[in-house]
Image (cartoon, rainbow, N blue to C red; front, top):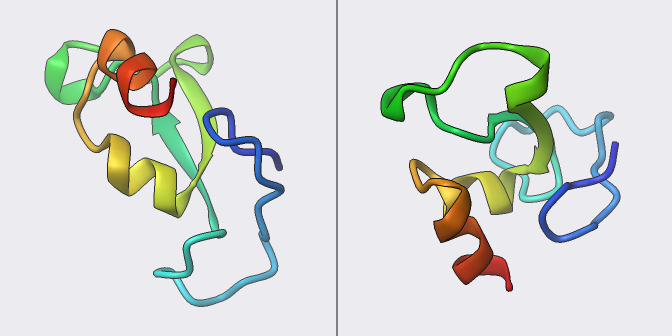
Length: 66
């Protein structure tokens, strides 16, 4: 799986849930900001990017990751 923000190849074989390269399912528009739990609103992120993104919206993602 490829992180959709930084492009790193994630490591689904990693068992440590806190490893920065572990893949995570991310909601593009966070559920807390009214996003839906749909395939169109999800993407794969590495844990590091997902933790950095947290509850930002799409416009904020562009500023964070250029």
